[in-house]
Image 1 (cartoon, rainbow, N blue to C red):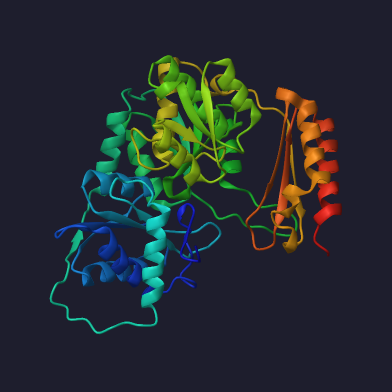
Image 2 (tube, rainbow, N blue to C red; image 1 turned 90 degrees about the vertical axis):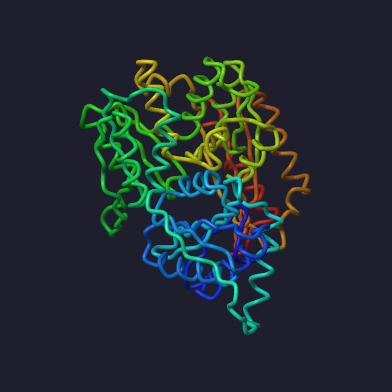
Length: 450
């Protein structure tokens, strides 16, 4: 698949790469390929990036020019858009949202009628359709034009939905929250206050680096803020509302692995964990797998991408899954990763249990780990996997660890290929030596020339 769409639905290419003409053709292709019956409509949502407005106009023009109605939601979290698509029985949805590292640029994410991410095969058909039109735009008679509709209460409907899922009033809890997107921040503040929590909203700040001091991230600011006040926790909501990381009452980070452990145990104890199973990313820490084994929970492993975790959940009918970066899926309640639902569920568990987040998180013990990257020659892509000098060394050390440690070696898909070696074990000095030895072996056998 080429540039428009990637494995996690839309990759989110910037306006410099995604022209308004392409956005219009994307809307037109979505209308023609995804709307199966007359009278169908496509939901269009966006974030608050500067480029989102012009792309929204272009996408809606393409949809309406195909005789299909486009209903705009305005600036809302991505999870709210997925919920509204499913709730309104729309034919599809388009979320205009930024790509990682794209600055003020935006891209598009496609949403299927059931609110989940669009099937990769269908994405491929759409991409071919879009690209084939770019050099040939035939004259059209506009005798069948769709309408531009507007929904002004999408965020309110989404907040109401989350409130119905959270059965506990959060009164008495004080939480600090920082959100990457302004639209997510407004929705988060409304949600948690209506649930009864006392909320302190920290403004998002783009990190500024200089020669004397490293950039200060939102997470670091949140840690300092929570540690200096009487809070039950802090929540960092990113990826347009799609991810949630936490900070405990002492200002210590609680990552996605800890969150999955907390949710899995709570749901299992209350009989709500489907088949006593959750889906974890292959890069999740060994501590999470050990936690699952100790608590009678089955951990099913997915691939490295967020989409593979969701696909594995849908395939097995599982209700909980996610990754270390805070993308948590509750598929019975939300069709996509949902940082606001994740944060609300975490506060609900703190309130119901009366246990501080630090104690909830410490039930999963993380092992020391180290990761090294080795640049390889372009001609060595995939070939290193059949090099016995490399694979035998990896297998030897994995055998030495047994179930007390782990060796993960995988190749990136980047333009400049590299291999990441991740080692986990109880002795940091030992795993550091092992990682260095494997890295040196890979460098000798297939490393890139400087």
